[in-house]
Amino acid sequence: MASGVITRKSGAMMATARYLTRRNMTHGGSCCGNHHHPPPFERKKQQSCSRSLLGFWRFNSTKASAVDVYSSDEDVTNTKHHQGLDFPGGHVSYTHSLNFISKSSTQNRVPCYRVLDDNGVVIGGSSSNISGDLECQIQQQPLISQQTALKMYREMVRLQVMDTIFYEAQRQGRLSFYLTSTGEEAISVASAAALSSDDVVMPQYREPGVLLWRGFSLREFADQCFGNKDDYGKGRQMPIHYGSNKLNYFTVSSPLATQIPQAAGVAYALKMEKKDACVVTFFGDGSSSEGDFHAGLNFAAVTESPVVFVCRNNGWAISTNVSEQFRSDGIVVKGQAYGIDSIRVDGNDALAVYNSIRAARQMAVNQGKPVLVEFLTYRVGHHSTSDDSTKYRPMDEIEHWKVTRNPVSRFRKWVEGNGWWNEDEESELRSATRKQLLQAIQAAERTQKPSLKEMFSDVYDETPSNLREQQEQLREIIKRHPKDYPSDIPV
Ligand SMILES: Cc1ncc(C[n+]2csc(CCOP(=O)(O)OP(=O)(O)O)c2C)c(N)n1
Ligand SMILES: [Mg+2]
Image (cartoon, rainbow, N blue to C red; front, side, top):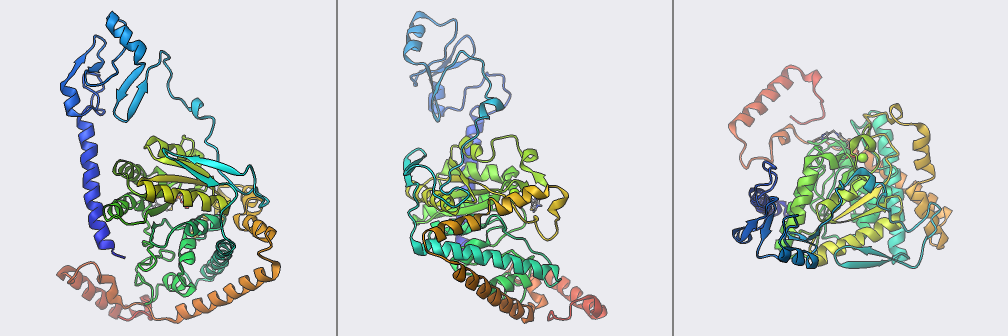
């Protein structure tokens, strides 16, 4: 991937956004709160303003004026005609009620878009509106071909099989670490199905379904997990940190949420290059509490960059439940706060995922703006192989989501209901995938590890003297203590 170019451009975009933010702040942002500053209007407007007795700033160049009890007759007449204030971002109407926007006003939670009920039956009327600034209509009855639907179902099954076998391999001590997508298979696979292969994906770590969809082979997954010499990361990363230049899939990075502002930068680069593509970045509910989430959304909003922010709200950030994570109505309202068209979607309904991401992509690419999609789902597995989730959540909660709200079996019911799939095809696919994966694992396990020198390569064009020294020291230590180091790594 031309990531070098993208990164440089995203740097330029960050600088632009930082400039914009600073400029707004110097013009009255938050500073001291004593109301003696004009609000963040542009300079020209500030020059032609005057202050009323109550301390409101009135702008001669704007239609609206502040209302106060000392207004002249002329002001009162004006007020009748202009019940509000023209302010950057749009007209603001006045109110006599001293109402704080409170939690109670958010008790009507944002509804969740879905197409299939829990039994895989299409619900509701014939069409629904997803509205943003410009209305974007999509059909409730899914406009999805048999071929796409079947590929979606097959990849979801392959992902399930892959997770089961890699998880077992970790439990057998063959892998150091693993993390499953169990319960969230529909999100990564159906999102990938709704995208173009030119769209750049910047993942968290529970989205290998996108790679499966785009043709990453089981052997490539296994090479990465075993960190052998064929792993694109040359064994430097923990298992599941997949990445592929060829498939427009940025490498997973462990620090949470770093991909979110990066996605805003990459999207800005796509916009400057007038590419017919967007960026799609995935992250969890926990990651939405990182500062990077807020910076990324704001940058994308002000630069009107084509990025789809996809939050997998699976209820948990390791052992922290969403109720301890934030007090807002999930993540969807945060997008709205940043001026980003946002939607909440049932993440366990593959057709709702497909429809929403397809619409979001269209809005991002055709209208040049960011979109936020919050998927409601559940992390059925442990956080990772380093976790035991039964220590902090009830078994019946896990069982409910595993059985009743299972995204794979729900989609299977719909596919089977259409007469596109049957039990024989199901068992054939599962056993063939299992066999292919076991072969891939055996081959990846036998493949040589990357040479030790790779630990020191690929950052600098020429290895600097301090790294050369460290490399020598490491070799010396291994020579002295050969038993303490793996024998299968070429020194
Ligand atoms: C900056 C940072 N803080 C903490 C961690 C440790 N950590 C790894 S995963 C995780 C939970 C993330 O939860 P969420 O974003 O909801 O994703 P999920 O695992 O539920 O898919 C935490 C806290 C980290 N990797 N990076
Ligand atoms: Mg989570």
